[in-house]
Length: 130
Image (cartoon, rainbow, N blue to C red; front, side):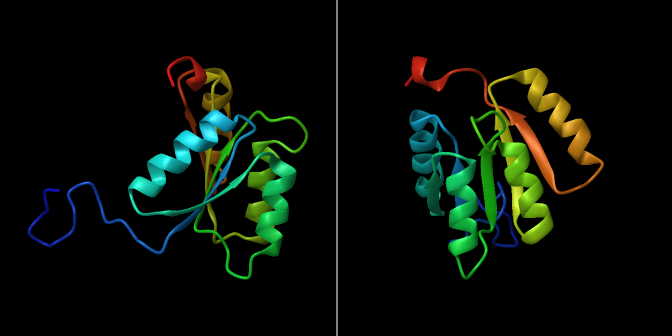
C-alpha cells in the first residue's frame, strides 16, 4: 500500500483494534460487509436485526467503535438503533445504509443536522451480483 511521507497510508489510517457491529436482516449483505471489513483487519460482530443489535450493544463492556446498520429492517430498524446509540452510547459512530436511495438521502439530510449518523445508498440488492 502506498504511504505518505508521514507514514500514514494514503487512504487513511486503519486502527487494527476497531470493532464494528454490522446490522442487517439480509444475511448476504451481512456476510459481504463482514468479509470486506475483516479483510481490512477490523473486528466484526453481526446482528440479524435491530433487536439483536441492541442486545449485543447492551451486553458488551466496551462500546463498539462503529455501528453499520441497514435503515429498513422489520421490527427495530436502523433509525431506532441509531437513535438509541446516540442516547446511551454517544461515543459509537453510526453509518446507516439503505437499498433505497430516497431513504438514504432523506436520512442523511435529517441526521446531518444532529451530527451523529450518516447514511449511504448501497446500490440495490447484493444477492443478484453475489
